[in-house]
Amino acid sequence: MKIILVFVMISTILLLVACDREQVSHQEQNSASAQPLSIITPGGLFEGAIRLPLVDMLTENRREGIDFEFEITSFGDDWEDVILRMNTMLMAGKGYDVIVYFDHPLYAYVNRGFLVDFYDLIDNDPRFSRDDFFTNVLEAFEIDGGLYIFPLQFGFTHVGINSRLPESIRDRFTQLFSITYRELFQIYNDLRREYPGQFDYLGFSYRCCLIKNTAIMFEMGYFIDRGNRQSFLDAPRFAEFLEELVKVECRNRLIHPLEIPYSQVGAWSWFDAENADVSVFTFHSGTTPWWSIYAHLDLDEPYFLNYIPIVDNEGRLQIAPSWPHHGIGMGLSITAGADIDLAWDFVARMITRATNAPQHQINDSGRINFLMPSLRTIIYRPNSQAHLESGFSVFTGLWGNWTVSQSVLGLPRAERQQQIDNAVARVQQLNEMPVTRPSFFPRSLWQGIEDDIITPLSLGIIDSQEAAQQIHNRVALWLIE
Image (cartoon, rainbow, N blue to C red; front, side):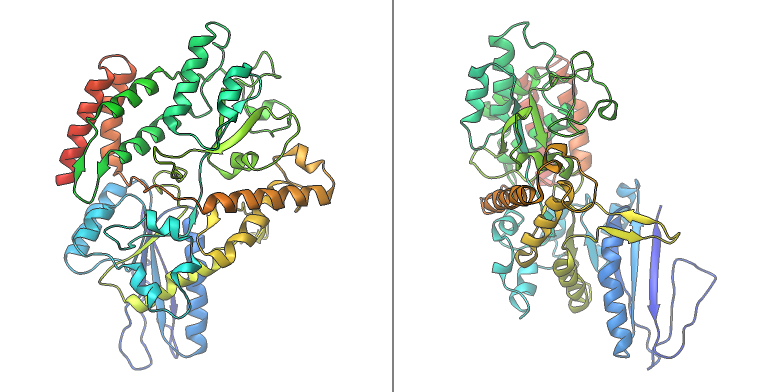
């Protein structure tokens, strides 16, 4: 479904053409019709965030007697049709001014000159310098030395180990400061091999299948040279990774989390229906604000220990997955055919106002909506500290009376504030580490790999070497298309 929302400002006359609700045209002071700033975005939460700076631009232009209008095109599940239509428009020299990343062929657009390099805009804008941003994250998004998608936020996946596991397994994990997916799978498989029958009730982690798929995508990226369009996925090391992965079993013998009482790690920890004192997972992975908070708090007698970030084979942080947005919350691109000054003004406003969302908002019916803050880090350094502090304050109950962490809520206010300060410091320290490049695999490519290769591998129809070779063949073909 496509919804086009148009706000129109007129200096003297507002003319509404009722025959088509999707477009609103008007007449300027000097009778020349202005082209609206057009933005395309996946439907959902992004629309509200996009509209705020646009309304600011509308208000300022109205105050100065300048005509301005914008269009937001929103879509749902018809993303394949949207990409085909957008490809045709761009090849014709037309198209949307700003694209909110969803699943379009980013590399192909860059190679064909369809997108603007943000570095050129930043370097020529006296309001910004590159040092205003987490350059390690921006560098991870570079393509051929240019920045064609601007991530507004980013976050990393953290994982902790079950505190009730045997000491030898716990110690092996707690001595680490970071971990790869391969190492994570090895520890789980070694636990089951070294203690047969004792921990059969333990699954790997909540949302295990999603984590396994994410791990494959990240590992695949390590064996691909996008610049030279080469795949090395037929390497023995990738097959060895698949061998470890296929041994990991996903179990879901659980009760719903809301049917159990709060614990020291919150209602979003999961417990065995027959014994609520024992977590049914070997690992607890924090990839969203609901869970990642525990990676940075000091809890008494926690169910999971030593939350550490997941890294790639070279120790670079893996940006937390958020399909199809690759963990960045929202990424923006400006097309070459846009009114670049106007589009950059909008993006710059998105950058500078992407701090913490207001905690309460009155909707059209007069009711109060609670807006969740994100514990992802804002890419714009001047706002990042305050954003994290306010996010942790909400999630630890320092603001208001809602919390997912009863143990922190029970602390005196000063101790809660110290917990928040320590947590923010940990996050900010991690934010400075090198970051691995996001995969940006098209959804169609990944779905084909999952259905045609990963599923047969999981069922034992093919072995890891055959799976690696098939993935290599498919990716190599995609790279040269």
